[in-house]
Amino acid sequence: MLTTPPRLRKMASRAAELSVAACQRAVLDAGLSAGQCADAGCFLGVGASGGAFEEFEPFLAASAPDGQFDPEALASRGLQLLNPLYAFQLMNNFALCHAAIACGLQGPNGAYFSRGSGTVHAVRAAAAAVAEGLCPLALAGGADSALHPVTRAELARDGEASEPLGEGAAWLVLGRDGMAEQPLAWLMEAQVVVDARLAEEAERWVARFDPDCVVVAAWSAVASAALRRGLGATLAIETLTRWGNCLAGLPALALCVALDAAVKAGLSRVLVLSAGVDGDLGVCLLHRSRP
Image: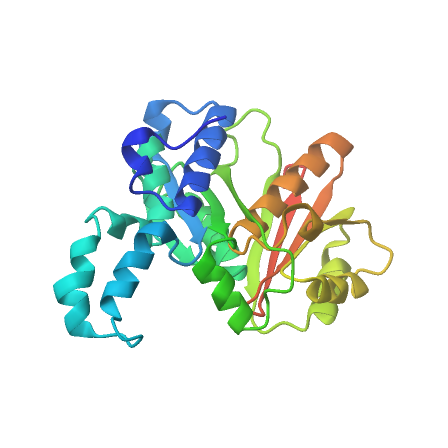
């Protein structure tokens, strides 16, 4: 299994480690050369900060000596306990940066905070960068861990922690038409519907695209059920039970499932509907035939 290089591991959060391993695998599977990587764009949906908690707890205790946060205690005692490199674990955009460094990606880039739909924005930005000629190809995806104690606490505070939680990362390689002799699929649509009524939106997109299959990537069983109500008799693949709620990582993993289904089952059109904690709906359509 590909892992984070030792030089970067001390600076990488769990999401960053997942991101690096998935990015390395995507580059390897696509057969990209070092020169192609140097020109490639890099766009990723990222979650919240995820530094090693065992390093953070002493800092937190020293910064709140009486149970209340004290800026003076933070400056005089708390910061003295942190390795300066720990800051790189806390900056969530480094889930993208570590992967770019490990794989030599030097093209245009962007990290999009995601609780679901931000990852679709990253895919959309990657496709736009390629289409506009900013880079000949781009890697896009998502990486996150809902298992970090701070993330779990955040989800619990928002009433979302009852769902199965997970972690994961996936990257896809997007290129111009004609770059690959046999691309796995063409990305025909990538957009986000804000504050979506899930059942109604699912019905609308199915009616518009008439897909052979829909991959459902929802943050909860309730959201998943709402999407499936709008699908009617359309064949659906559920991803929540496979990985749990891995937040920014789930839509990217769902796209990989859609690609796999399209290739192995010979499906012509596969629609990916990803409903995140943010309440928005991500919509991606993959087409096996040249547009």
